[in-house]
Length: 56
Image (cartoon, rainbow, N blue to C red):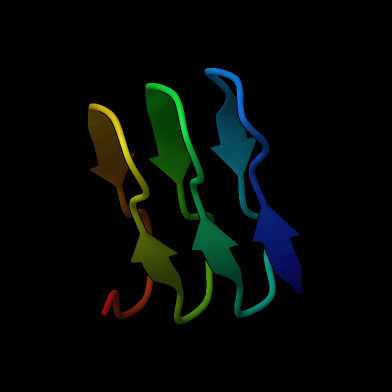
């Protein structure tokens, strides 16, 4: 699943499948769930955390 942020500060959460999670402008929190996830920060302060599986 592809999950994309907007121009505001957001918390983006992945699910059990392999996710591509990308923050945009703003201070974002990116959380991958189970599966192999790709977490990409945008402009602003980002916090990312993986769970079960590989992270890129």
